[in-house]
Length: 521
Image 1 (cartoon, rainbow, N blue to C red):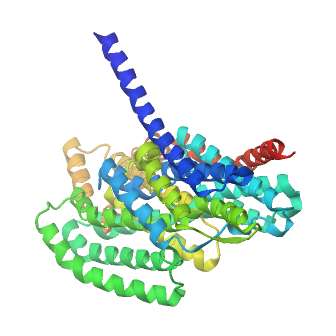
Image 2: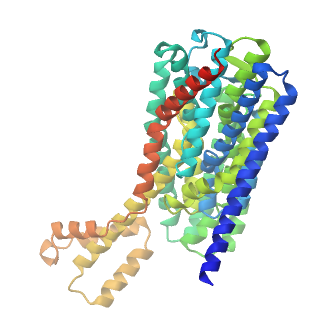
Image 3: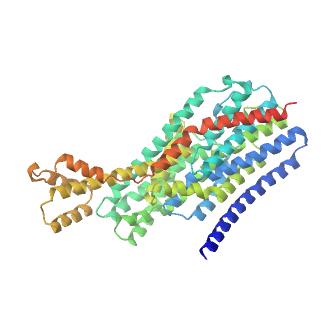
């Protein structure tokens, strides 16, 4: 019986894998057939078909890997189900790509190479195909091992490696490469600090108060209004910049107008919600469910508007080179090319996205709705700050850095609280056990200010009254050190971030030489 169940389970897993693979293959074959109809045949037609297929493959890998950062925290906090997150992200990713993806996308991503140094049109086409294929293969591998990596860095590494293989080291803009290397530290650090800062603010202004619902009535509408300002400004600067260029001061003013409207709407809503909830910390989480759903949708829209260029930018460049017969640093994007990116991202998310969604949402550290809200805030605010300061950041690194930030803050708070309890017990070692427990119950129910007063009063006792000395109490603190972040995942993700650009570059160089070897007479 048990063997039969094991066989059925294995068959079901294989059936699911075959379904995913078959669906992805149908999408790629569909792109191939569509492109064949649009081409005139010959070598250029073959190259266009190959480029379109690889572009679709790249788009699916972006959906499988990068989109998880937008919806992972909302799923991990159980604000939305995995199925709901996939539908929301797929719809808004595709909408962002098609509506605000832009008429023009820079095919030489971030100015990483100088197109004037590319020898000829054919070399440029081989270069772009190699870059796309290398980035897609690396993203596929990263998704398999459960490492969320930057798709922007993947395509930049691919263009860099293929460009160097095509025209030598002088083609690269090494100042841009240096900025990208700096973003490995800047992005997660900023995301982590901002997310941890918001979590600290919420704890001290709401959840550490004796009357958490009264505190929530005051603070939650303010926090949600601030989130509305951040996302409105973020979308003005990044999401709709392809439709219309919005200056930063105008974007901020639009964000302020949206924030005021949201505050007016949220105040009575939060008051009604708190009227039905119990006065405990867990109740506060329910107030952040709706904001998290909106955050996941808006992040997905902005991501689709921006990161679709990673999939279709090089494809648009290849299309331009073949149709116009020349090399262009910027290329107009036909609607069919944009559709390949939008559909591919959505399909990749639906088929292979759940693995990374679970990694970001629940495997790194435990998330509730408050922590997920802080991560979403960090994603929007970090991009706004970085764009104005000219700092290179990655949306993937920001989101994952935010997850680690709230996790490490929780570790620090839990460890500090455990040390406080040990300190209290050491001071009351000779007291009646019931009196000690009563004191601990009072301490646990007190707000932050009252806790501080209780500890100061207790520590004012003479040192002679203490059973344990300072060193012994420190030892107890170390015993109660808490680890709420998985270190193995931290090391795996950090390593994947560091090697993304060089690995994609090496793969692209190899693919370029293979393609050139096959196509040269």
